[in-house]
Length: 159
Image (cartoon, rainbow, N blue to C red; front, top):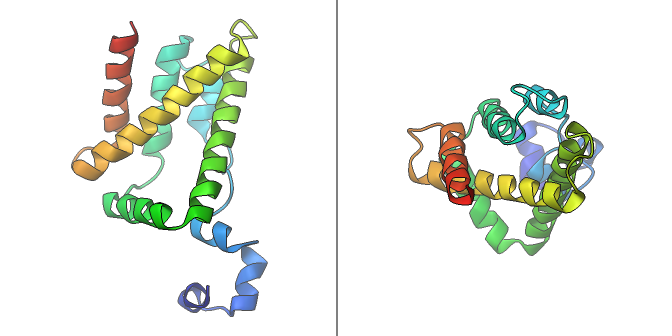
């Protein structure tokens, strides 16, 4: 925390005015505001087809962020070595699954049950993980395109 405070040019005490904990200093803000592609998905767009829209929303959310393969690899090494950090990330990922589950149920006007929505949300999160793996292996292709490839492969298998 001392190194982080020094890097941003504040005292350690002042740093904690901006971040509530060490975990938050490493991970950043808890769950960010809903990005536009996700809002469009929640409202039933862009195509009206649940599977096609999850595919597009996932890729478009990934396109919002500059992704660095070495940064992802470094972060994953950190998770393996820091159990408290790994637990915090797991809890955040579970909240993301819950948020996506709720969005699917809301979007589908309750025509889908909670279990099915949770399965879809969890699989989508797994596809993000696979896309990150692929991106670390080949960062010449945008992580969103790796996600689309993983999604398309999963859709083919499930069909």
